[in-house]
Length: 597
Ligand code: ADP
Ligand code: MG
Image 1 (cartoon, rainbow, N blue to C red):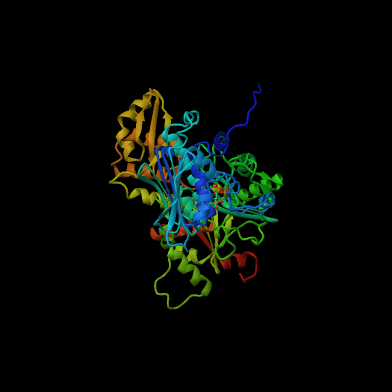
Image 2: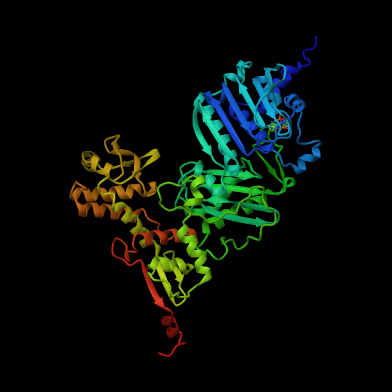
């Protein structure tokens, strides 16, 4: 008797389904793909139990008519391609027509959809392959797809699903990829009846990135070669994470796992980063669909490029430019990428990346507020600056502070990794930005004397080791350190851990500062004493400041000047070193013997 037999269609479908739908997160990804392909502007996602019991994706896209709703969960039904050649010019996520068919076999699938022209929508449901009759349904334009009890009919698959939290995390991963790829689309996500994200449509890509990863310092980059455009944001080398949590790579808005990426990021940063640390990199590649094959992975997670070498080079150069971005005058090009040629191929995401770097403000406004928050002071000055550059208007009654004058002036670069140069027309001013930044932090810390230094929470507690004698003293004075922003707990004979740091302080500086503060405290264990408080603030302000060697973007420089102005323009750093030194034009004219002397 023959051992080989034809499998029945339902078994074949269930096996195929396993390739496309592995877990709730892959179901979610397919539904999001469909919503985006349908031109949604807002997408609402509801999950229960990590997506294991319930996934709903509702969009306001173009919807389907009655006949298409019934066709959509049939195998190999797609509205997106007609022949294999169409894969060379793919502009949609879906094309295989198997997601809904697979889901219909392994869950209770309910599709409700309405086109704008139709008076009402329809609802169609299939429970593990068994259809119920389609029926009319009152609803808004768009489509909602609900998946209940995924894999309930496949105990073997069910067994491989993780705990709710693990499945939820995977769903969140898919959600974030889409939210980062489509900043102009509104996304909502709730899990077990709690809202996790409510992302309003963002006008700028960086607003969306900051909505999701607040307080990440971001520098824009933008690089084009031939028909390949690479743009995005990366962090300066002084900022990094212990994992790749802040690294994303998109090709034509699709999040892709691309093996060479790690190497290219590492090569771009070179030895500027400590080993085992990872910068933030949000990289977006736009290219002709024919340059890449998206059909190499059942879940379309991987990609094959026609010319992988070229893409690698472009990505590395783009990031390099982001890292190297030097201060340019805001009236000049926003980008320092010398190689970047004008963008010919407008990417589908409408955007105009701008250099943008964070300053130690506490929180970033969400994208909705972002526009109002844009420093209007700088804007108005920028406009005036063009109108009456260097012209002293007699109507100016109040005198400008030095910081304001420098906001008028042209940023003429940065030297010795320390001094910013400002060309004021008849005068040149050099600003030691390290000193300036110290001053700003110091002033902000100083005023927290009665409430204690504001803390920021660490995701992963940081630990420190002290000699035994010091450890005892430290433990006794843990309260005082709490006031300074460290919540220290002794976790061993010589070891302490903290899950907070002073708000301005980078983790990499925490140990040095803690030691410094400890030595201060040895002299007198109470920080209520004014002079001690002052010294503590100096320590935190100075060690945590922008180090000389960091490069500042034009926007960052403007923000520094703005804050300086707001503080009343103190002229020296907390240690008394001057912040700015100026020379009249005549000084140079004399030196070059252009003027009589
Ligand atoms: P694919 O996306 O590969 O075409 P799917 O099984 O995911 O296959 O979907 C089948 C078809 O159902 C799609 O081609 C599309 O025409 C339609 N469809 C699915 N989801 C939606 C949606 N959210 N809005 C409008 N049409 C949809
Ligand atoms: Mg699809």
